[in-house]
Length: 149
Image (tube, rainbow, N blue to C red; front, side):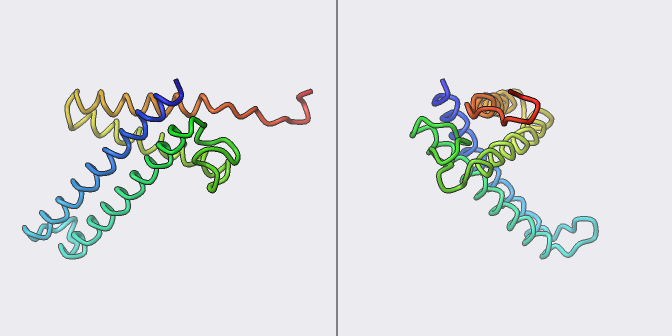
């Protein structure tokens, strides 16, 4: 079941990365074409800022989807120490990456629910559920404390 959840999350996040990056890039073009000022800012600066944000956000989402896809193809948890897609990232970095993905996905689900219609909302909610399942299914043991024996 983990592999299916990882595949769903990976494909969904890769698609979101491409769509969000392209949409922001187009918005940057519209700002430049119509000389729109954002709160009095120079339209050229706003255009460059939005296009840079589009490239960075799109690239990060696609990279995150690639890490989850690699974990799915290796049939490993994304946050296991030295295994799967986390081999070079390290266990804590991969776990944090999954948590960052959850936070970003919550923002995407909120925007989709408010502005984009129920079909997009349902798709982004499915990706959020898959990510949550992946995060909760990581079978790393709980850290031992002095109180546990």
